[in-house]
Structure formats: structure tokens, C-alpha cells
Length: 438
Image (tube, rainbow, N blue to C red; front, top):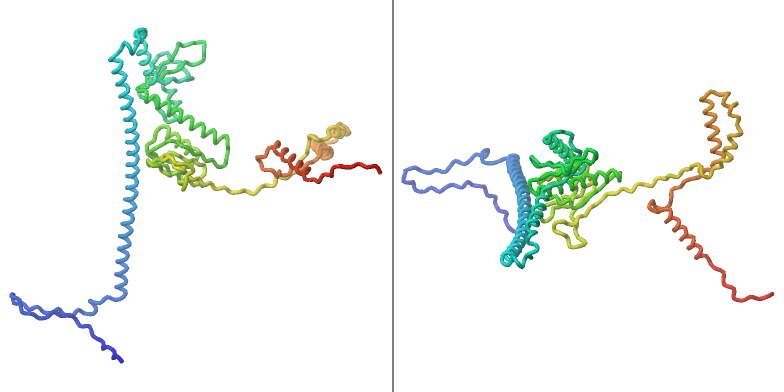
């Protein structure tokens, strides 16, 4: 049997007295703290713990927010680096191609300079200036565009006619967010003909061939996109429309919300027109899956915000890194079929001879003389309705059991097939194998 331990009382730890220091001062033990100042109550202790936990939570929240901000900035930086890397790759390939072309041209020039007689026959030497002139003219023509069907100005001064032509062209290309270069050169091709009402073609000279080619490309793309989408919406008259394809608009960030479709980034005249067209038609852009270079080239425009567009978990073929496979989910609500059964008068099968005899049996002069114009019209209308009820058969239209896509010719073939199937399934009489006289 073990005796219970005797309780021990807490004793303050005191410093042992030591020899007096050289200064002559004597260190004394501090007085014991009072219980009211040394000990915390439970409420004060919990309040201090709560304050510490609150401070830690606020610190953790700030750290999380900083981490999210740094991650988003890192993703943007990574996307920019990937875009620059892809552009450097394209520039490297173009540089290699140009270097190969340059080497080939240098080789040809060397051969021509080393042996000009064998390279070019003597018969063609006289045509060299003409050939060079033709090449120069072709190079100059690449900087020109020709506008057909633009009305000619009636001004007398050439400067006023040019101003009118510039104004007409600007009005023509204004819906496509395009503009002419500053101080363009304009010429009417051919002589003015007072007899013909057909306007002469207008030639517009651009500073470089690149600007002319870009202008034509933007104009054709914008016109084709705008007209095709608007015509499609007008023709289909559908309650919901979804359009998707490779629009090849890199460097653009898309957003669709309550305020409609919007986009930011590197905007060209073509991309601005596409954005404005679909925004005007109240469409949404639903694809936010970026490719290997951080761009969204495949766009999904929808008149409804319900479809979802995600990256496909698997692909049927080896995917293109610039065009990732997409999974598009469409929501469809099956509407209950409406019973459209109704009756109607078959006027094609009506007995019009009996109707004529029915009307001839009335003495209309005596009938109309006894009534006012309104009452006479009522009597005549009643006679027409009675003749229809008596001599026009009534048929009942029922909802077809076939789907809507089944044509009348296909229905006829199906009915013939059923008739032949029923005919072939009937038992046939056994053939006569013996005849006898009774």
C-alpha cells in the first residue's frame, strides 16, 4: 500500500546570496509579485488567444492573396515568354528561308557574271530592257488597288474630283474600320465617256505593296465575315445559333458577360470588325482554352450563354498544338409534342354543281328587297355557310406518326414495304400435284 504523496506548495525561486560586488551594492531578491498582476484570468487568456489566432488568420489571408497575385503575374509572364518564343521561332524559320533564297540568287548572279553569253542567247539581249521594264511595272502594280463601280465626281477641278473620290472610298470602307493612307494617289483609268453611264475604274496607289495587300486582305475578310454572319442569322431565323471555326486572331483576350462581348489586346481592323459584328448580334465567345503559344485561335460564338466549351480529355487524331481539341456541351430541352388534330372542309372534293343549284333555288331579288343592306349580307352569308355544310365533305387532319424529316415519297415506299411484308407472311395454298375425275 502506497501512501499518497503530500501536496507541495509552489515556492518562488530566489537567487542565492553571494558576495557583494566591488561596487559595494548588495543584490536583493525582488519582492514576490502580487497574485492580481502575475496571473491572468481565463477570459483574458482566451481573449489573448483569439487575438493571436485572428492575427495569424489575417497574415495567412494576406499571404494567400500575395501568392495568387504572384501566380497570375507569373502566368502572364509565362504566356508572354511563350508568345515571344513562338515569334522567335517563326522569325528564325523565315530568316533561314531568306538565307537559302539569297544563296541561290548569289549563285545565279555568279553564273551569269562568269558566262553571260551562254546564259542569255544573243537573240534575247535586245529584249533585256523590255523585260526589266516589265518586271519593274509588275513590281509597281503590286502597290496599287483598283476600285470598280465607284461613281465619278461631277466637279470641274481635278483636286475637287480627287477629294470626292477619297470621300466616297472612306464612306465605303468606314463600316469595315479601314482607312486609306495619308495623301493617297488616285487615278481614273481610261478616257471619260459622256455616252456611257458606267463609271471608270479608280486606281489607288499605296506607299508599299505590303500596305496594299494588307488593305485588300482586311477588306475581303471583313466583308465576307460580316455579310455571311448576318445573312446566316437572317436566313435561319433560329432561336439559338452557334458558330465556331479558326479565326486566326492571336494576341486577343476575350470576355463575355452581362455587358456583352468584349475583347482586348492586339486588335487589327479585321478583328475589330469581327468583334463589333458579333457584339451587335448579341453573341458570346465561349472558348477560353489557350494553345501552346498562349493564344485562342479557335473561337466559338453562340447566341446563348448556355453551351460550355472545355478542352477535350482525349482526341480522335494527333492534336495540333496550335488547335487543341475541344469538347462542346449543348443543353437541349425536349418539348412535348403538340396534338394538331383538327377538321377542315375539303373544297377539292366539293359538289359545286349542287352548290350552284342550291343558290339558283332562291329568289334573290325578292329576298334582298325585304332586308336592309346589312341584313341582306347576313342572309347571303348564311346561305353560303349552309351550302358548304351540305355539299363540301369534312375531313379530319391527324398528326403524322412519321418524323418530320420523312418525305411523302419515303412514306409511300414505307407503306409499300409494309404491304409486301404482310403479303409475304400470309400462308400460301399448297400446289396441286394430282388431278382426278370423280
